[in-house]
Length: 121
Image (cartoon, rainbow, N blue to C red; front, side, top):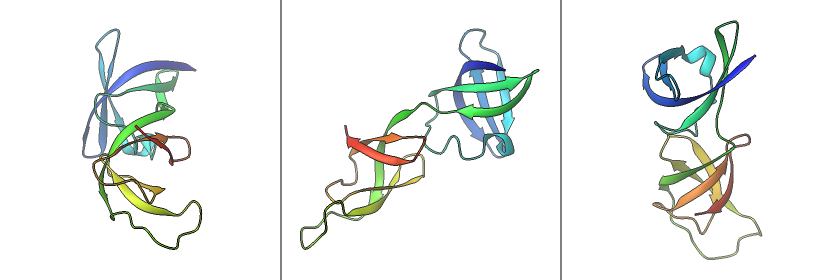
């Protein structure tokens, strides 16, 4: 199994394009192979591309990413239980549940393995 650091360049319909950081070779990987592994990854971020005998079988995103919130309901004060959350859409289009005090425009840190909010940045 070979794991190579590659830069995620862009999505072109059903193909995701990556560039090797050392050789500058570019490859296109089908959406079936990529799956949900890039839902928290912005363009130009570095990921690990895993292959066996030249066939790519998985993409590993960084463990933690920092993304800006593009849409969420405004926070409110009131009778809420400890740990109340609300949905928020980040700049990659993925939805994350965040605490009520997080607002649109905030940058947050997310664990890509679980999709959980970790902190504001």
